[in-house]
Figure 1 (tube, rainbow, N blue to C red):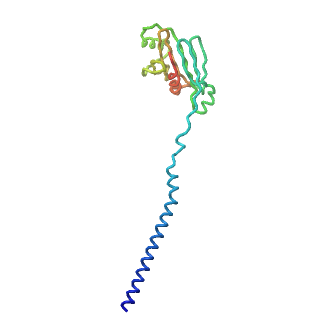
Figure 2 (figure 1 turned 120 degrees about the horizontal axis):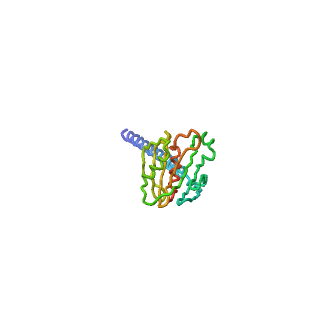
Figure 3 (figure 1 turned 90 degrees about the vertical axis):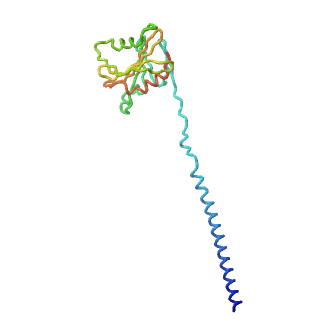
Length: 209
């Protein structure tokens, strides 16, 4: 009986070992299969976002104009009008259709450039003060004055009010001329020049004197 019991016990041990080994192999096989299925998902998650790269913006066509010792480079879509012997007006894109610009909430702007005789070595601050205060019927109040850069040098930006209308004026000088650069909003009821600051910066960035 002892031999028979030992034989049966040994047989059960072999069966248990075989079952355990088979289970282990099945689990390993399933795990390997699961890993191969998950791999493509991981590759998709690390794909670069091509939408962030975008494409370069097309170059804006430009035009150059010169007069009275100065020149400027502005977008070709802007209109340039000679309004006097020494005065020109530059109109922005929106100015060509002021009604549409008003509906879209975009300011229709213009910049007037006037050239005046100037003696080399004269005090520029005095010249500006006399120019702005030339008409005693206007109420002129200065808020600030600061240096401003343009393509070939620097000038003076005057900020204040004229008859209570917020006004920005830029002055630049060479040995023969003083230049007044005056941005403004086109149309009745225009409240100052602030909406035209972007146009002024674009203009100054292409100005040489």
